[in-house]
Amino acid sequence: MKPILQLEYESQAASSFILVFSRILGEERENEYRDDHDEEDSPTHKAIIIIIALCIGLAVLGISSCLIRYFYLRHKQRTMAQVRQQSEAAYQQQNVQLESLCLQTQELAQCPICLMPIPTLLQLITPCHHSFHKACLELWLLNEKICPSCRTSLNL
Image 1 (spheres, helix red, strand yellow):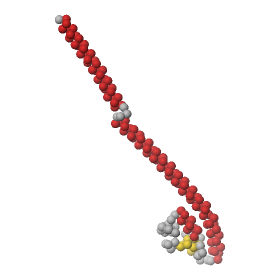
Image 2: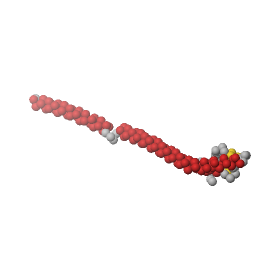
Image 3: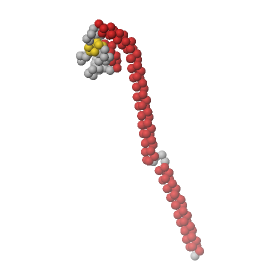
Image 4: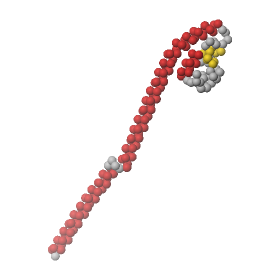
């Protein structure tokens, strides 16, 4: 009887050993499953990385658009300042001529840009039939390509 009991004991010990071993393997499999889901290949992790990359991309895009706008406006202001400096001397010279001509004649049309009388020698008429001083209109056309009075496109 002893050998049968011994076999049963050994089989029970073996089965308990197998049970413990299978539990250990089961825990390892669960740990592997958890590790698989915690790795960089998980869909959640990929989605977070994509969201972060999109946020960074939008931030870079926003900053670059602000910088481009800043440099564009800076360039435009410098260009306007150069145009003003170049035209200032011609404009002042025209004003001297205007004042001398206005003293000679009394009834002249008024320039809509500078509000001074327009002598016929310095008068320039646009295709839309508006009268301006030549220097005033040239200065205006350096910045805008439209009539100051009616906003019609001018190609002079």
